Length: 79
Image (tube, rainbow, N blue to C red; front, side, top):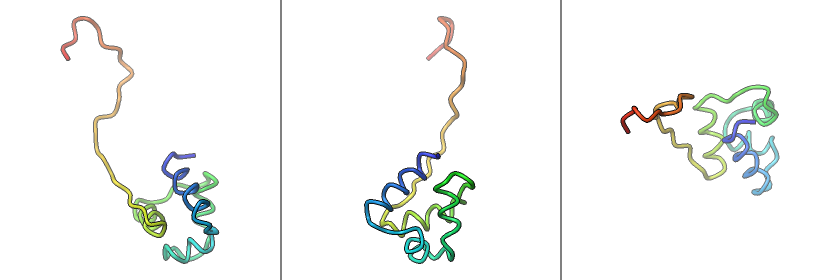
């Protein structure tokens, strides 16, 4: 499960929302999408991720950064 989805799923449970009640709050429509995301069958779009988080009183921050590399630095590499 995606870590962000895991956080939102846990927060939903803490707040006592069902998938159906959260879907209504988030304006997503049916409860199927959230259930699919929580079960790892599909990934939410950024728009739906934000709707989901906002319905729980949370926000999603997007940080763009270089991807980690598998290369191990050698003594000749500059920091």
